[in-house]
Image (tube, rainbow over all chains, first blue to last red; front, side):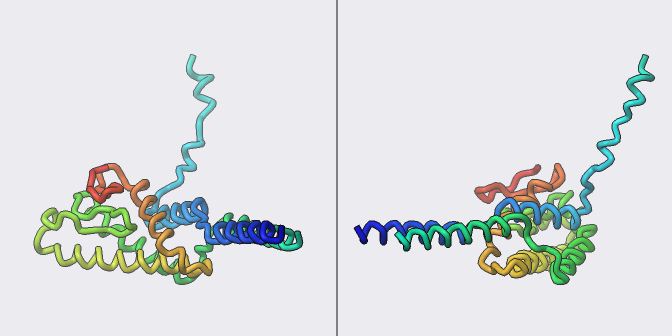
Length: 60
Length: 138
């Protein structure tokens, strides 16, 4: 019985190690995007949001 | 049973630590800012080389002079210098980000992430390297 507990403990521990070395890919991508946008002076196009609702009324 | 409880709580602690680390990578350090500025200043000179296809964006997060003949002979040395300086900055950048986050062992993964994102964000017409190392015009 003790052996089973030891095995379980070992399994949990190895799982923890796996989690611990996990690379935060999403965070890295976000960081990369931020830096690349600045180095290449890429705009995040905030101007794209300026849709003019007034035009719809003027159309007819 | 105790052993399991202890390992479980250890896992929980690690998971909490991980979820905090998952939010953002630290990129606001003087060293990173300096590298960023240096690369930003160089981009005006590199952009025409990307445009002509002389320089391409490699998979490994570097730039490469893939078509030296696209650069007039008189400017070839300058182009080589630009590429070398850019790659030095890029390598330092990947290393610095890993270090700033207390994980120097992440350097290669950070490099790979950047390699992919530089390519994704490259302008149409620029040359980029695919997963097998072949060059293609975007």
